[in-house]
Amino acid sequence: MGIPAAGFTVPTARRRSTRLRRRVGDYLGWGATALAFVLLGGAMVSILVTVFVRGSSAITWSVITQVTQGVGGGLLNAIEGTLVLAVGGIVLAVPVGLAAGIYLAEFDEGMLAPTIRFLADVLVGVPSIVIGYFGYVTMVVGLGWNFSVAAGSVALAIIALPYICRTAEMAMRQVPRSMREAAYALGAKDHTVIMRICLPTALPGILTGVLLALAIAVGETAPLLYTAGWSNYMWNGHLTNSPIGYLTYAIWAFVTEPFATAHALAYAAAFFVTLFVLLISVVSRVVLDRNAGWRRRR
Image (cartoon, rainbow, N blue to C red; front, side, top):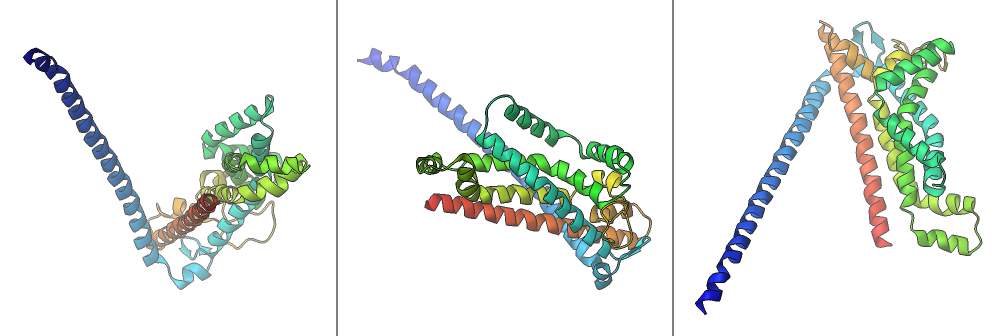
């Protein structure tokens, strides 16, 4: 009886050694994950604290109610311009991006759909300054629009387009197949199924993508330098041949100036941009969570 017992000693020791190595590997993996989380969270908290502390101390009533005057004054023109450009870019990008997303989700056949998907993925990786250069060559100079709201909005629309497209595609693909089959069984056509069944069901996911694209548009600087220019005045309502101010330009231009008033405007502009992006991100997160809860209840 002693020989079999001795024979089972080696496999038992190997299993213990394997379990020990796995446990050590698990601890090391979780430790590295926790360290990465702490570093990332610490960096994010540090940025937010710096922006909000310095920005909130620089915000005064005149910053909100006055236009920029050289390296002083306020940011009313920049706040208005940021909202105009961001909304203009999203208004231009949503119809095209939504249509492309619906096509990719519902008519994924032939070579056109993979080509659109590939181009959308490539467009995500294109540096924003390259898009600004493209806008400058084609619209500011080529079409004679000069620095303007139209050129800046088109540049932001190009940046937001792939995000809306792919988000719309994923949201449409998440619509249960049973809903489509039930609609087809009742005699509904393709356009009826898409517009009356799929699109309303996927709307929260699509809205999340639109909000994220809006947050990206609010924080852009490079493409607007070449397309929107800069103006110390309020927008005059013209779409072309009229530059406009925006918050990210104030950060880029004023933070390097050797004047306290310029630094205050840069901090205040950073505060407003961060606040806008944070609010948009929170709203998109709430919409996504409510959509997930609605799906679970169903």
